[in-house]
Structure formats: C-alpha cells, structure tokens
Image 1 (tube, one colour):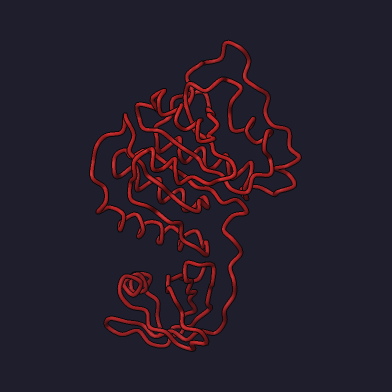
Image 2: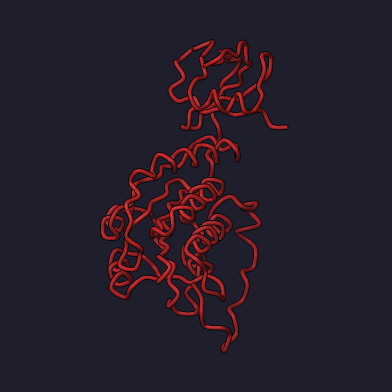
Length: 266
C-alpha cells in the first residue's frame, strides 16, 4: 500500500522535523495515521520527503524527515487545458481528472455561448481538488488553476509551442492524430475546449489568427467535460507519457474514417 502523502509547502532547508496542521492534519486523522507510521511530504514543486510520524496531538502532528529527493516531472509534455465554463460540478471533475492526467495548468474562460456565472469564489475549491488529486495520483507538483477569464484574454496568454482548438466543424482530416504527424516533437501544448453550444465562427477565427489549429475528436458530440478529459488523454498518449515513448513514436496511427461515416464530431 502506498504511504500517505501530505502537502507541505516551503519545507525549511535542513529541517529535521515539521508540524502538520490545518487541512493536512485533518487528512492525517482521516487516514488514521499513528506514531511510527511512515509518510511522504511533498512541496508541490517536485520535492518529496520521506518522514516518520513521531507524535499526533489534538491539532497537529510532528513528523521527522528522514530523506529528500527530487520527483521526476509529472509529464515530459507541458500541457495547458483551457476550457469554457459549464456547470460547477463538471468543472470540478475537469480539475480532478486533468490533474491525474498530468496537466500543468488549467484555465477556465467565458465565451459567447457559455452560461454566465460568477465562479471566482470557487477557485479555492479547485485548488483543493487539484491538491487532493495530486496526492492521490502521486505526482510531485500541483497544477495551477486560474479564475475564469474572458476568451480573448485566454488567447492572449497562450504561449504553447503547439496550440489546438477542439471544434466540431473542423475538416474531417483535421484531428489530433494528424496534428501529431505534423508536429510529433512538441514539448508544450495548449488544448482549447468550447462550451456546450460550441464555439462561434468569430471565436474560431480569433483563435486561428493567434496560431491555434482546429481539430476534431471522435465520432460523436461530447459534453465539454468529456471532450476536455478525452483530448488531454489523447495528447498525453501521443506527445506525453501515457505509453512507452518508443512505442508511441513508432506505432502506426489508425487510418482515417471512410467517407460517409457519421459527420458529427467534437
């Protein structure tokens, strides 16, 4: 069984003991950790610390650090996921699953067809979900999660080497597999996923003018959260670390669908 993991930012250099308090202490109590149990601390910046619990009190636990190591990067690919806002519970799911899949940054944006809502206060919840998910999947860092910003502001801040916009009206030959064949060595990718009603043509024009390439995935119309998670998984398979790198680079990609296949994709 994996050792319990706890987030502890800014571990003092050469520290021999630290106190776990607050939400992490609550997590420790929920996990029924006892004195003498081994645990792992991580700082969210890819440093991990082996430790042993020395004392568990009413509001804190003292742990002794026995070793330190640098955690390998969560993914060889820096992947940024930008998703239009939808129902809050679905955004929570996106944060959780994108963290598990190794996304480096999660952006939410408002668009012409997204439902208007103020989600600024929910950022703290998303940060907590990202932290818990990072602990669960044993990654050494925590993705940044930002408060929703306007679509144009999101476009302006994108600096990824390869920028991909998931759009149901993209040409049939324009999919993530063809994007991989065109640029197989990309080390940073931005994935842009639209709202339930899809992107408007004006938004597509704005994105392509900023260097985004439109792509489609699958043979069915997917909900926003499904499209986001699916596109991240495909990108991590093709460019990232969801398979052995050699196998990914040498495998034959599936052939294009025959003419006359179902036209509705996203």
